[in-house]
Image 1 (cartoon, rainbow, N blue to C red):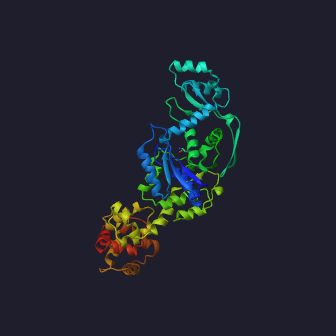
Image 2: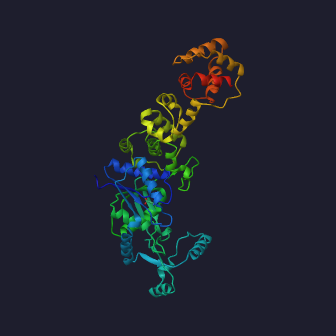
Image 3: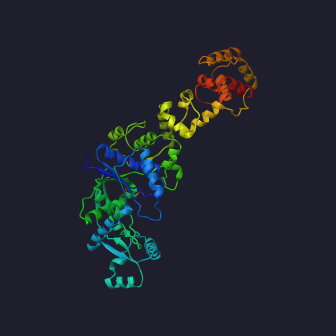
Length: 446
Ligand code: GLU
């Protein structure tokens, strides 16, 4: 293993992973795989109220299903001692200070600055409190929360996606790192973990660029090397909106429940905003070899459900009945190999198989708009059993001879009468699966 290449994915277990989250996971995993490095799953569960075990389990299941394998896992909630130690170090250096303003007071200050057209940056009033003033406030029962003192200088780092990034920390409020109740907020634990786990590459969404600048100052204040950063554009939906944990419809769990193939999801995710073609890539190794983080575009990465379904149908139609038998069992489908071979090119997801099973087994609703005279004729010309692959041809030539209809005028009403739909699998195969008796009924009823 290459210890010089360690990445991590750090979700908060406060909701379900969505397609955008797993794009971050996939990129981190592929980078580690490509370099024979290590990929770590970090659970950001410092928010006790909102973090739930059920979400941790779901995250693990989702990643496993997607074949994104982590070599190590840990939870932030188990590492408080390390955060406290580093908190004390920063405090000794005078880089952390107690604050006492309540949210209303902070909001008043913010509004005043905005009214005066000034950036709403915290004024560091608490930094000017004397030891005596602080002791008095604590005596009065006030509990402090803590901020990290930024340098007010410009932070510069080289981002593998964005190139040179400059952030003026003077335009940022000193971040709160510890709450009144002693709980830590995101930045310090993240830095301490990245140090302790030897993370070499921090790869996350571009919504973290400012945090990264804050974190650079924390690494430096703790006398530790700064990791390499890469901030990828966030995935947006078809309307250009970001994905949300609160929207269950775009969760990985729901994609799985729709029986979408994980290869389709990964292949789509890695093609968006990169030079990798949109095609099913069956091996993670191949995907990793083709992936180059430096070639990632900076434009918003746009997800398309249509493309996902297209990839999925390509993958699913290439699978044999045997390869899918477990899925079919799980879905409770009464299906055999002939049916699968007949319908496999006409579905986008496995859940659509159900519809074709219904059509094959019947009964179906009749299409009242069909020409009943034509139906009467075709029904009369329907060949007697036994049927085989040549039956359809024989039937069609008799119909052509009798009615002189060709092309769409001939095939469309037949298809609609037999299946209730305007398109679908080849009829020569389908009619055998439906069978003489049922076809006859359908023709009669139309
Ligand atoms: N829990 C953070 C998030 O999900 C982690 C960000 C990071 O990778 O450091 O946004």
